[in-house]
Length: 103
Image (cartoon, rainbow, N blue to C red):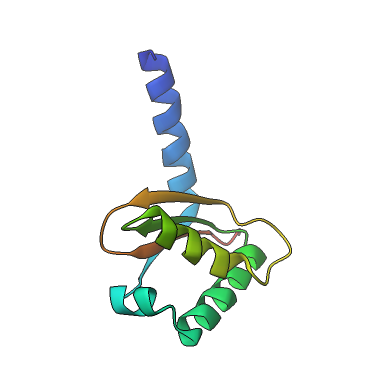
């Protein structure tokens, strides 16, 4: 890949960043490993809000199985696919990019 491709990707990232507000919601590892009904409910409600506000997310988790479980809980009560990427690391979190209000 040439420098032109790198420039285009960086420009796109800066444009998205300028048009959104980022919020990071950390998930305590104990809550995730226990997969409690409270966490499931909270993720379901958050998923609905993400779809309603047309936000995009990054799920950061220690492993693929946990990241997929988080995504499934976010997606369980929505009618439209949530735009998400996954990354692996700590702390476990959902990074949400909320669109900036127009006006």
